[in-house]
Image (cartoon, rainbow, N blue to C red; front, top):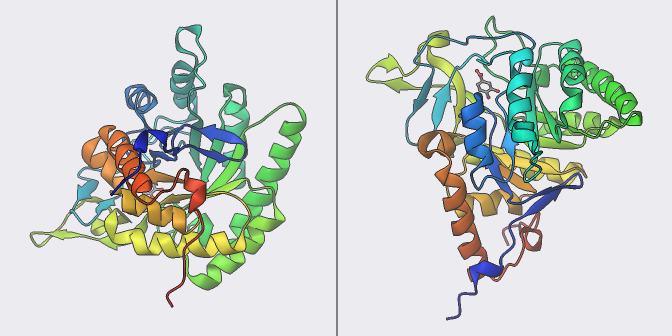
Length: 326
Ligand code: DHB
């Protein structure tokens, strides 16, 4: 049987008019905080560079162990450890303009985390001259101590962020600002997806990334596998893939903006499924933490071979084309 030639397969993608050399990139969270980690992503086959969520101030994060891989997935309570926006800007400047040679070979996606709309506006204002391609607003970190409601689950708070950030960015755009604004969303129930999709349509949100980690508890030898928050934390990896697919599928039905799929990808078939549900690109978290930047090359090669076998030339040949059971 002729299995097709995987050299002619195109796995590039375009999101909000921005070209990505590959539809496979890292997820915000793991191995994407320091300059060294970001350079490793830049020099890998990843289709974009996504940063760890940045906050206004430095955060040391929660006590270790705060990340644990249990095979079917991972649990973490990192506590948004990051150097803060001032130091992060220095790192991103180095990454972007090192040796006076601007490197546009892959998009830069900066993740921002805040509790209040002003946090996001101040950070965008501070970073606006960096030529960031996209800002991914993390409104869904599950490890906020003190059991505060996630912004993403607080529809009034979320609407506040959407209305103020998008009108602020709209003004910036008149002065030449080009970055696209997206939301990193948590797993939702179907009725919540309807409400959030309606809200997103009312504002100039350019893309969504879904899903951020779930929430769980993992036990190892009768003890909690991680130390912070009585062992409870964000759940990622294979075990959350069905939840990711349901969220991507329903948002794709309701919205016309691009979706970056994340949750449970460790094989080419997982990527295929995310794209079938409507994702325009995918992000890799747990599997990237497990094996490092090699995963982007492995997944690219495996996806190309898989597509060649199925006679797909580009991801648009099957994107959003999931068939129902008959
Ligand atoms: C953290 C942030 C997240 O958005 C997430 O999904 C999991 C963990 C954190 O830094 O604690």
